[in-house]
Image (cartoon, rainbow, N blue to C red; front, side, top):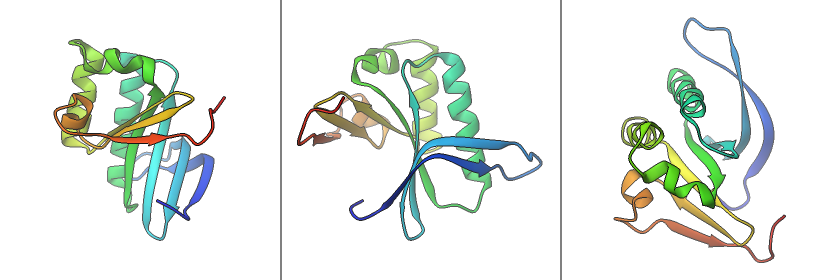
Length: 133
């Protein structure tokens, strides 16, 4: 999304019965199209519960946004090897359109669906012009 506006630590009021506010790590948007990224150093079942809540908050809102989980590329196995985290990621990707972004200082790997996460389809590779970090 070239030429988009990027904001960090963006508050978001949940819809429905809750007046609780969520803080998204990164929101990038152009017009009505928005990408929301929740960044996690490591990914635990507790973190996935939080991401599930964020997906529900976005779904209840009127916002047209796609939620991504952003994490270190070294966490790849945790998201695909059998276990509770991987099962929750699969469910969120299939039911709630969650995307996953893996990063290191040279590369971003963007998976928009579970087939890309498991490398059954080609994910997007975005090389960095310069090492980050």
